[in-house]
Image (cartoon, rainbow over all chains, first blue to last red; front, side, top):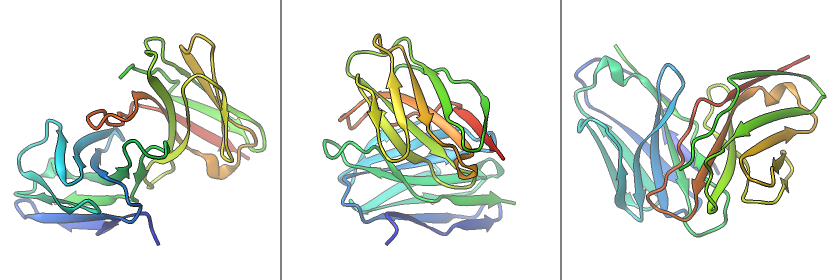
Length: 114
Length: 112
């Protein structure tokens, strides 16, 4: 009964491929996020969705396209993968206006582009 | 959101209290202080948050100075499993556009 689950946990792929990372939360939260943690360990927000609508899109290449089929899911599709896309990607969720417990993060997807 | 300043690293002996400082001198009146930690290879984990008053939960205590320009996270009896990067973040709550922004954090090493 993991709160925020991401699949796959590890992903190794070649440059130029297209891949997707899936995220699901069972907390009933209305907002979901994607963060990227690079080799220097800095965590950077990429996208934020509230009730299936995009509310934040930081400076991210348009090869990255988030999709939220419902408020419990936020998937990340990446086209034409590049070496620099190698990182750990974290999904998170939160409830705006609800219990003030901040964000719940998934365990991450380690993407390696070779 | 106001910026925070934390020491890049700290050591603590196992069983002792770990006191992690954070400066947030430009904090505004409606910004909360949040603490998260990231244990190696895991996602960040919420620890505690506060606005003005000191807070305590099963994980830690948060001491906020009266002028709110700094705070201290206290782990009362640090264990080896508390070795992690600790992030102090200030942000306005209940704002859909105001996401959690992480800085460099403090790498806490708990030693036997």
